[in-house]
Length: 368
Ligand SMILES: NC(=O)c1ccc[n+]([C@@H]2O[C@H](COP(=O)([O-])OP(=O)(O)OC[C@H]3O[C@@H](n4cnc5c(N)ncnc54)[C@H](O)[C@@H]3O)[C@@H](O)[C@H]2O)c1
Ligand SMILES: [Zn+2]
Image 1 (tube, rainbow, N blue to C red):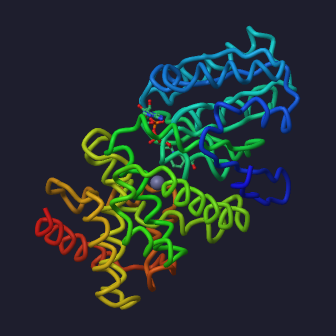
Image 2 (image 1 turned 135 degrees about the horizontal axis):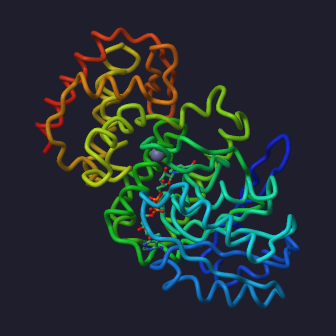
């Protein structure tokens, strides 16, 4: 396997493998990594129907007993009821410490599976097989696990690294365009925070992406995982530069919560968030207008800035204050210096935050 990335951590370093057709050969790879005799394959019906059967029969060839478990699809099921149903299932199957949980699905399956694996018997083997573009470039890498609780997203969770991540870009063929775009927003984010060349290669090749040229997608996935791995390995528990990954997410999360999770996909929400961060950066003289314009232009060309109904700035501001990253009444913003370089600001005056929110709404109205 030639496309692999090592995520180096103080403890529990692991390898991410990226290859077309990887899931159909997973048995061989897993044999190398874990000697688990029992494997729970956690998935959702749609993904399992298209990608699960071949995967499981291949895993069985490695000699392990494989138990599929399907949970209902959707963010609303990333909750304590589903979590406990997974723990119960493993208990009923007599799972021991040497057993393994594999998450085969999008970020929801990855997050809840990781949490279950991290607390069952204080931690069993865990493997990520992400099947959405968003999960392949973001959610499966870095070891954050979570469920939503009491109406608050990702309120309960752990840091728990998988033994490995297996990424098969071929599974993306069953994804619709809107879901692909949402993953693309995170890839653009990596370009802005860390890698000008990546940003430029998206600018030049949008057609290849939206027409699903798998080999090009594979390169983007690989570069994204490398960037996330580099950032996370320097800062596993988010004390410093891991916060860069939050570019566009301060306003993005507030918009998701304000409009509910149906109107905007996560990628669309953070695309707007990146527009806001870019405008705020210009206002604070951290970068020139053209740096913001270039970001807006690319996000628009990727179809990520479609329609945003008018919002109430006060309500959005209060939601930003509730963000997990905000501390003692100060909102933390990740802001652009230039394409490929960001910086963090915690002391932006509320008057500027509000005035750029107004400017942002006017700008978005012009675009859509
Ligand atoms: N842990 C982290 O670091 C991290 C980072 C980013 C996001 N997340 C979490 O990830 C979740 C969002 O991830 P997501 O967008 O993958 O959501 P998701 O898991 O809900 O998947 C979205 C939809 O895509 C479908 N799907 C999955 N694979 C498919 C395929 N190959 N073909 C067709 N359809 C497919 C699913 O059935 C689902 O309906 C959120 O809960 C978010 O909090 C976690
Ligand atoms: Zn995100």
